[in-house]
Length: 416
Ligand SMILES: [Zn+2]
Image (tube, rainbow, N blue to C red; front, side, top):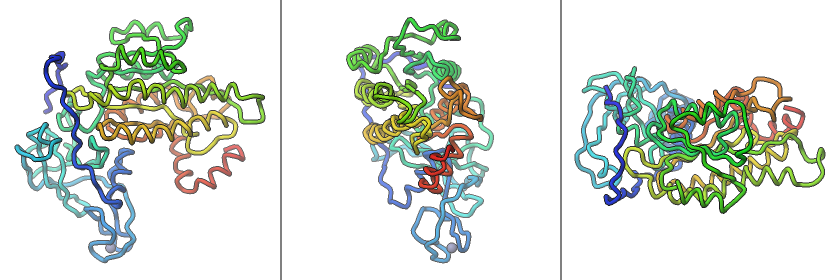
């Protein structure tokens, strides 16, 4: 059983703020294949195309037949714990601050033996475990031994909290929390145990259905936040920036047209102002304080979430300028991720297909319900993944894009 996490006491301001030292992060190019899969929540190992041998650690050629044809394949992770040990000393600064730390040797049913971080609910060997891949605070894949069926509070495990960005007891800022997606997000975050949810809103006079119920929640505080206004962003950052643990940038402007259908650039500019420059202003305002608190106790600053769109991968001409603004946002988000990584902060990019909202009225179903999108985002925080493609449409586009981006471009130009 994992002891449920208790709400941490308020920090004594005289005590030192723990600085972030990343766990060892250097990996060879081949090993990054495991990280790429873990970033989307999958545990993959290389499998030899010729003799089917499963490889670990990652390598250039098969350990059994020397074939260079190794393909990354999803693993079940089922295995047996052969041995465990508890680390009480380490020269590594990351682990030194977090001792004791439990490790195990697991023999996977698929063949190889792997060293894993052990979840606290796993008993002494021999014991069945399920190995999963997660990203550690350096953003690299590590293997974790999970119990087959965990208890209710298994996410509160001390080691697991170091790998994930669970909203429980954390303070979250949601930009533009008035929209249908924003409201669904706030509900999902409160349900997941967030301590405070600040809702940024740019237009206080706008009454949106359902919003009164949200503002009644005791965890919720409304804050003025206009992402087109640099000064407003930095003022709010000055006020609450030192307390925010998770930023969810949900603000977007979405209009449905391509190039020919309109004159002028005003609407396209409005999309860029929020979808691209808005994120830039928010990151400049809130990034530094977030980075400074990324190792501060069990509710340290943990993650930054950007609501992008599957249209960011390849332009969907009927939503042409919107797609372009999201492609710009994706590129900026990759920069943000690179800059946040040294602080151990996770940047999560969310690529939904068409959301069931007013701007996608003319899109054929299936469309993603705001509640489903919100729960995918909260799950991503809990699982510690980096890239999420919620819904059937996003999954299908992703597959087509990976298969051949040029073919997808042609198909989208012909209407999907
Ligand atoms: Zn082989």
